[in-house]
Length: 209
Image (tube, rainbow, N blue to C red; front, top):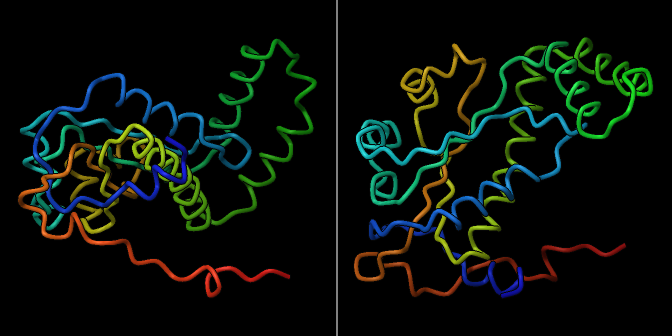
């Protein structure tokens, strides 16, 4: 299946049937998020993979009782860093050195540029930047789910503060950004499942200059 075909197939399922998604498909979706591009390659986010039914039952009312939270096979919680610091930069530099076998000194200019960004952004700007990068990984996971023919329902409708408290994200330097239930559509109970996609016409969406 091509990406285009997969995107035409995909649907933000309103109901899921509880069927388990095979582990190799879950891992493929997570790998797509892991390898998504991010600004400077810093990946300023953590992804929680929640299979535990009891925990998802606790999350459901915090997500306005959307049934996919508990009807899904797995629930992904994408959480962004709340404060980018020099420690993050140092850890990333160490990872580059270990992975590529280059010297620390060869990365001085890159490190200086990153530290300039860290030191010249407001706290609010850094959180927004981290959230933006999180959405890139989120989008790659969504696309890979479609390629795997796994239903994935993007969710921004949830109580961020309550989710953060439940998962103790503040203590981890994180805040929740999006939820992504993964599973299979319930064709009997989802009234929208067979409806055609509605998208803006390409003549209105794209401007060629």
